[in-house]
Length: 240
Ligand SMILES: C[S@@+](CC[C@H](N)C(=O)[O-])C[C@H]1O[C@@H](n2cnc3c(N)ncnc32)[C@H](O)[C@@H]1O
Image (cartoon, rainbow, N blue to C red; front, side, top):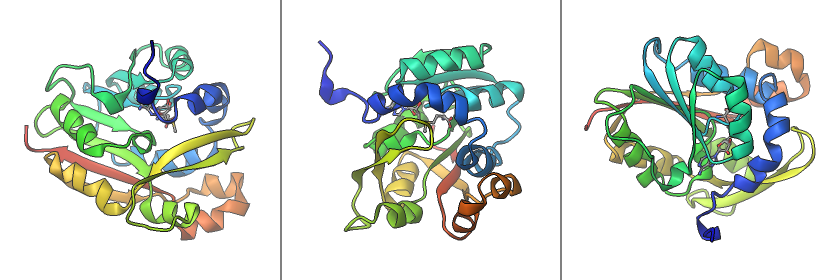
């Protein structure tokens, strides 16, 4: 019997969203012209690297990494997302797992871990970053993005900035309305688990929209030019 308490927080939401997400996220301004250029801008030359794409969704980032000549393994909890990913990026390996419950890989396996907008759905970042540290080789980079702590604070308007808590909103921009739960956390709850796991912080970026964003969504461009939306981080594993 499935243990419902261990079901990933956003699994049901992403199962519902998968088809529309796969269709729209490749060009949707928040992804294509705000988050991805910023996070992918933190990547080193990945050619020849063995890369883990955590929360790969429908394989958009997986395909990008393959095109840059990396060998890529994508993991995700959503079977529907993975079925899009297998179609979209047939040159990669894919595995279904809940990355909040440990990673099914041997230690020191990967040259780089990449993750776009997936860590927010996991509660325990101490365990998450320890596991990422374990599967990375010494001196290997971790590049990831998450909700920006100030942007999320402004957006969700919670009572206490310092709490890590589940918040949720109904997404309509991918098609049918779907309620998507996520964790909102303060800056210290992002950086301290990373540093505590032995990562060295190399660079951070706060997403800024491209000109293509202005052309596609002029009504939102001004706000996302003034307020942070996503935080992108490059860290390096030093303690292996
Ligand atoms: C916002 S989507 C991002 C997908 C992809 N990285 C991209 O940028 O297009 C978040 C993805 O994380 C996956 N996810 C969320 N929580 C997860 C968990 N605990 N284990 C595995 N995958 C998870 C979801 O199924 C979804 O595909």
